Image (cartoon, rainbow, N blue to C red; front, side, top):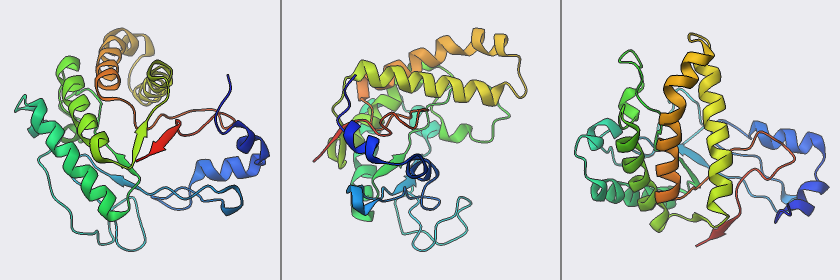
Length: 222
């Protein structure tokens, strides 16, 4: 398969590729001026942007820029209102552009599997159909006015997204669960949840495990 940036990737050394995987700091990717690769700024976005004003840290100890605090995903999901989800997505995108954020780390697509999970407020539902529909609404709203839109083959991007999501989640759950049980109970739900989100909302970023593959899907600035 021919990649748009294949020639550029071949010019990079293994060390340079590894540096790109590690990031410049907590919230920014490494930039390479000689290759024309800019740094990308990421921000948490489950229920509002958290763009830190000074040095970034994953604990959120440093002050953040003022931003709208939206209801949590769990709260919005209780409305069963996809149009509302799209409106919130649009508002998130507008604030992201204003704050110089390139990638919104949201919405959360995990399915609620236990009431003991401390991050259930970031997820829409324990039902994959409902979670997928609401997440797709958020993504549609975000992509309506965000600076990056996916334009690659949707099935190809969805395939790699599914692999990344399932493998990472299964590895995490394998700490306390038997793999066979996890796969039997949750993989069908994942597939529907992610499939609904990707096919109805689109993909804004896809994670690849291979350094020599393209890291971000081919996109078009708007």
